Length: 596
Image 1 (cartoon, rainbow, N blue to C red):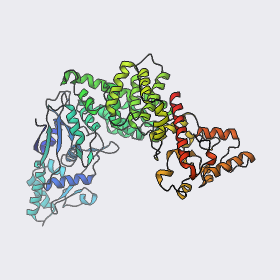
Image 2 (image 1 turned 45 degrees about the vertical axis):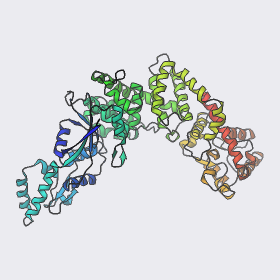
Image 3 (image 1 turned 90 degrees about the horizontal axis):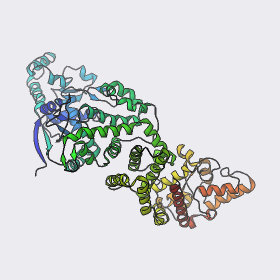
């Protein structure tokens, strides 16, 4: 069975189909990412008869047209949005959305004498030889009238040459564009797989783009939901753009959706700055208990899980559930409470969260647990924090994590989150994990490794101080970008048999330290600088940090998971030091986890 058909369609027909909503473009209200030079090059390719790539469409069941009618054969444009937007801008004179969500024109000029396309400039606007804006040519009077006016402005030009060039320019509207129409009876999973494999300008399209395309076909409601996702993500990073959106997208502002996210204009937290694929995944988990893009599209397409057939009567309810999930997701109190939970667990900086997937599932879990009226906010917080850290520890958010998510949600519904979490802990976080697997995870030179970031979070959670610091704690150092110091200095190790970065940059050799302490230590091994510290305790004369009490030093070393033979450590026993410290770091993480 053929999965698609290929046909050639005139540029003018493509633009007509878009204008009449026969082809739905989900990206028209998103910032246009092409450079004006790319629009110019597209026109030049069409003029010279060069191929410009294929557009790919798929029929959307239950799509809504303007005015609320349901389309019988509306096609989702799942690849080619930028090219079609460029055609609309250059030929039809339609504005595009700028980076500030303002409407702007892209005027492409053409010189019939040189047969050159260019972005309109002041110099071109002052020249009589150029067609200043080809969209005016395509929408203007007859070609004969245009030529007469051009020759009046440019006496003495080669009329035959100009006439030939203008004729070729006019023929752009009839230039053929390849359109691949995916078979209407393809199942959603197959279309999703085809979609993800498509490359646009060498950049793989994501499965989230597929979902965004589907959402945008559901009339004004769908377009506003798509904008809600897009604007929420944008304002999470750039709250100052709120006024630009309010002023330049009145349709969305008047819909009531903008009011839901206006709080982002004055927030500056960097911990939760989602991209739209994150938002879609969270909303899919909350609304449908589904994590895969294809599964979310199936729900929005009205697929009946029992019959595996499309039932259009299911579509309105699916969009209502998805919209409700989005409303819960973007609500100020929900975002702020969830972020506060994660910070209270010790993850106070976005750099400490190496897995967005773990973060996304934890937020989805929090939103779902809110529906349990019998659960206190304290209990909800405890479970969400522990689930988040468990996910990081076990690598549950890597690989085929979306299938794992769906299984987890189903079992949470069946068994309850507390019981199911205990079951996971019993099977994956036993003695072997804490004593063997976790220390092995810490055999790494990457400070981005989940185990090391959890170790730092554990120390933040317990208000632990920096290495050899009397009063400055780890949280203050992370927020102030304090030094990550080699406990056994790099230069000392390089000079004594450990020249490789993977040797001296082991995470078990790192500790957050105040800059003056780091400078004082310089290239001296612990057996030397710890001797200075011991003399400092005896004499009270400060040389390295401000600790002057033996009990305070012992407490600091314990807080930093430092082995008790630190006074003897140098390059000679560096491997033994690393092994001992990894065990202590793992114990720190273990105590932290069970105390959550």
